[in-house]
Image (cartoon, rainbow, N blue to C red; front, side, top):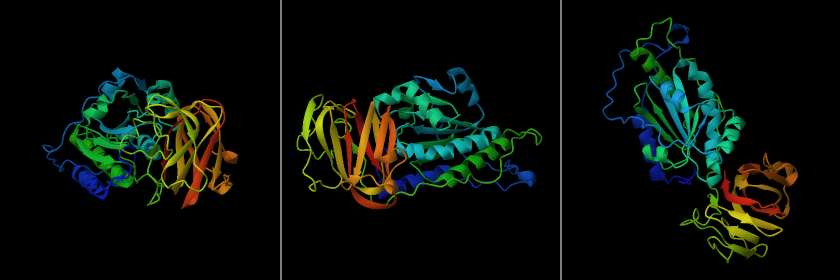
Amino acid sequence: MKTAALLVAGLAAAAAATSLALGSLDEPAAAPGGAAAPAAALQVDKSGFRKAPELAGIAGYVNADEGSLAGSLEGKVVLYDIWTYSCVNCIRTLPHITAWDEKYSGSGLVVVGIHSPEFAFEKDIDNVRFAVEKYGIEYPVVLDNDKETWKAFENRYWPRKYVADHEGYIRYDHIGEGAYDETEKVIRALLAERAAAMALPEAAAEAVPDGLVDIGEFEHTRQRTPELYLGYAFAHGRNNLGSPEGFVPGADVEYAGVPGGSEAPGLFYMEGTWSNGRDGMALVSESGSVTVRYAAKEVNIVAGNEAELRVTLDGEPLPAEHAGSDAAGGIVEVDGHDLYNVVSSAEPGEHLLRLEAGAGGLELFTFTFG
């Protein structure tokens, strides 16, 4: 996952313990007709829970405005999703979140997307609006461009989901992808708890629909190349640039590439003249390339501006059986700042990937592997 890369076993165990501590709710049995059974007998000691913080420093709103959003949260179960639109781990969670919004919005659930950007281009509200439309998001999304809300939640990861009950107490917290059934069960239990606590009459009670959302989950490769950052500030402490010229902050650097066959696994090698930015590199010369020897079944890049990338795998044009959804015919058409799926193989493996670009001012920010 972003920033955390792959959580080490200790942190994963701690996160799992946190989820269980915050979300150990047994879903009430279903009453006749599919409505959740009354939970009046459910007395919860909330002294150990903290309240969800106020949304702070919001730079813009999509699918909502400040006034309407504040009022819509009162007395509702709220799922806060901290995400950013070029994060592949975040994107994989969106089908589940949009399905929960569709299924439970009539039962007292409000989803709030907190868009906390990693890269400067993700602060542009037009880019966020495009992503919201692309992924079918109909719930409110707020632009947390300076990460003030991120800090208020004391967050460090993308993506992260918090679920607050109808009184605003955070009852569940999950880092990263996965645990979808667990999260949905918490949502259902809190909706039933809300209905009982608010003493909603049976005729007016917002019944919780039966069953769990059934959406396939992405299966990660157990051992895969970690995320590679092309910006000098982002690569600090995790430098995977194999080119001997290295990073030269703020400068245009002519990279010589690397002789074929000598690429070390998990490093990327540049060829051509590239401008070294804090969060990525921009191609300055008429042509250039990036080469990486990786282990995974999926490769994505975060790229920007307009460019045509020719993709080769193990020295050959990208075979159709390995082509990602954005690499038709072995060509990736970059037409804006976004995430692009370059390789999608049925099985994991070790391969040499090369991206070649002509003139056009290509910007590259990261490689991510799945």
